[in-house]
Length: 360
Figure (cartoon, rainbow, N blue to C red):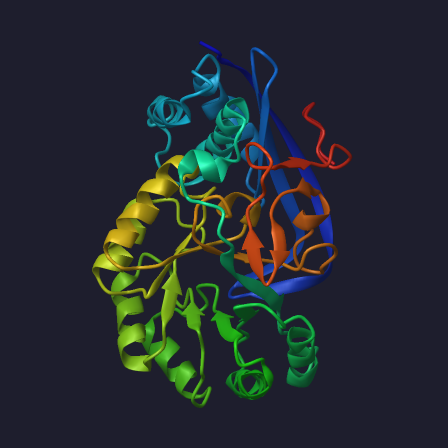
């Protein structure tokens, strides 16, 4: 049996050119955590995530990595169970589950590389192009609706959906949504991400009413995902398609959203939910109930899961520097085509991530 011999971590901090405002959050930099798992015969697998300013590398090192070392390199699902049970006393959800997810993704990368096939083939999801949503703009009071609309329109061709964030100025949002509804290509839908910005369904419905008659592909994360009843009410009374689930680490929260009618589309963060292993189960469960699943960030991984996903502009963009350090991976051109290379099909730029414990 070939075993996992070690799990290394690295952290990188990359500043943003301007602050981003999403819901109650202000983001001035992006901090990423990465892992590299290595087998005793030298095969490597990698994964990365947004740390969200949490000590992800330390959590991996102290609570998770030890349960992966010595595990069968060809059985990541069994190793996932070892990692979950081994850390269960301190957290089956939350940051520990994210750490498990980070390692789990790297282990699936190894398993597919050892089988000499891309991960999508190992998972049986096929290589058909996936629908994709471009995260196109973050409005701010310092920019006019026209300026933001022009930023979105300059990128929109070929994408199934484009996404903007909501700012708490109903008049601004009404003008911006109206512009985009009128000027986007006919084949491109509009998504508004609220980022859990409303306190309850009453506040949400009151503000939505001030947007006029918004023609949206979906309204994303209007409330905290634990408020499945409130999300169901927004969906029912606004008439909008609702998508919820970003950053959720507890599968029961996602299941409750589906069971209580709180979502038309289930959002799934493959790292937060604990990696490829539990993501596969949730995707199958939602599919049995006729609920489509959309991946939140990490398109390089999500592309292998056979679901739709979101991405930031590739190359240089002002919102997410991740494309600058991902080498290889899927092809992005309105839709996302999974790579043909073995494993996940990408590596991390060694000039950004140093797997020696030092932060960059």
